[in-house]
Image (cartoon, rainbow, N blue to C red; front, side, top):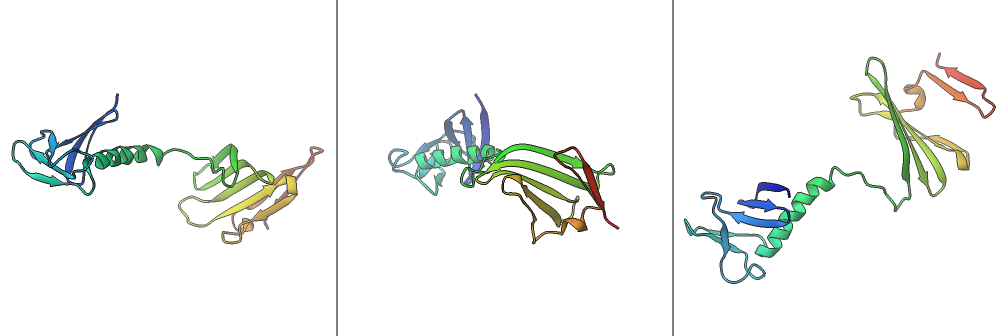
Length: 172
């Protein structure tokens, strides 16, 4: 069972699993609901100092909010598959130059139109890169017009054909 302690809206919160307990920021005692139940009150009080603490929402809703905030920290680091566009990642490969100055990343996805290979390449630490799109099922090869032209990044491209023949183009 995970245990966490955090401060949100000026109040200390002790969270154990899915149980959330508000604590007095000064005395570390449990805070208790003032004026009814946690479903209709947004006020808490400390038995030691009688300091009133007003929450931006009802106590019950604040506890749910606390759990949602903790979950969001987990969710933000998760990878998501975008089923709206139906581009499901199949494989990914990353390569850096020997001096670690340049990078190339290839991402193979399955989309509505079939397989799509996206190649990102550029100089590390620079904003501009090139993106090349290869869609063999519809026989399309393109690059992103908003980014660098592939010839601004690559000095040599090599291809292997169906019969095993290899060909390369060198930038002069």
